[in-house]
Length: 444
Image (cartoon, rainbow, N blue to C red; front, side):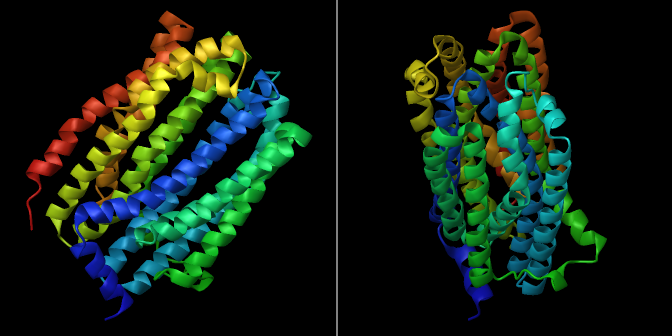
């Protein structure tokens, strides 16, 4: 029996709950470590003062832009790799992963060059104030230098996940995350924000090297310049399937840029507070996202193999496990909100603004297990229109109008409550889409 046959048997015969959790836990750990090192940046840089810490909030937006590019290419090509393997077509899988890898690298290099040329203007566009700008430039320069490696790492990570090798993608990402935490501890006291950026760049490059090694050794889809497709259909398929991920992350960057700019009038303390809240919320959210990403290869493969009942079971398992895991982090965050913010920034003004916002945020993230899995479902089964609509909700159709309206009428309170309100609306709107798939899709 070939490796492709064994993989087909694993994906279509392993009990669904076991398969989703087996694939989801490594991804969740990867995302947790990634968010821990983002929080470590916020913590170590926070020891330098409010303005340096606020710079991490500006760079959160830049990283969301990079992730938007990477997830579009990575999830688009990864889904097509999974389809190719479900059809037992290894050459198609190799064509898609090669095309995705080199396309992602080219886009990452273009963003790197553009960002470095217009660095100050770019940081101002993302919401830097005059006092935050020097720190944002020090950090942003290194993030942009590492940008091509970051994009390629996330493409490799997604393609390994869609081949059922989430454990190895976890090793690559977590190694980089742990090295970044160590680098922050070593470099930030000596070199400040510049050291935090350097630590991020070095850890991302090392992570890329590890992921590249595992992909070359273990993946069924091979990467080669010779396999880059010359067919427009291949690029269109990658973009069509990956665009919901681009929308999710792209709108996150736009909405956080808008949030930073609307928060400017309330001072650096407010930007620093919202930076801490966003980091913690992302940490909690990644639990649900991790399980959802473990569900994606299961949904994609089994839908292509016409095992629809397995896809339905996977959706229910993902929503249930995601809710339990999110709750385990969100509830303590609500209870100890002031202590969480104080751990990152000792300024009483930052604590006051951040604690109130964090309590609202922990309520909002409880609704994410209603929206994230169904969004990822429709993306994985290549229903791009539905997935794109759902992707537009949280950081776009629900959040941006809410943010503008509440800030206009409620000031800083509007800043604090807008994202949680958007999370609640998105979760409630997603329920009919889950029900439709569960009750209208015919079993095999």
